[in-house]
Length: 184
Image 1 (tube, rainbow, N blue to C red):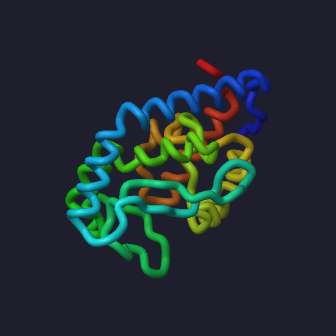
Image 2: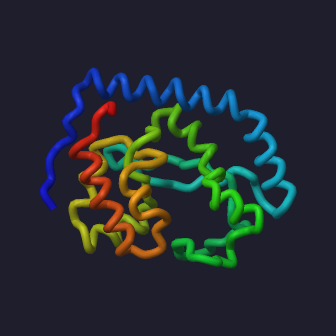
């Protein structure tokens, strides 16, 4: 893999960040009725909190708490983190619907507003899986140079990742995104 820096100027990075703030705030305001509805549905259809927090690794390798609507039964991961699989028994019926339409990701607009994430950038991972990815792709740390995002080239091309090999494939697309990122 040929590795280079991103080519965005400081001004372009400021415009990207301002766009993230305006768009995330707008989405949260405009979709606030949907947020409330989804919160109530998740909370009332299975035991546990409606909003799930999970540590992910972000810009400069700094951990942050990513927010999602809970899609799995409470305490679905008791010891070792697991990747989600097709027909995963840990996923609630409502959770399957939320995941299908990516509605579980809506609370991440708060992460974007706070600056933990961007609208576009590599998906942040958990440290447990990063260590496995680094065994196959030691250059994983390069994506710490940019803010992680809700979506980028990697998730679009690879989709949900249920194996470390798919995570490495997604990483390679994310590196390509990073090398070519622009305001376009």
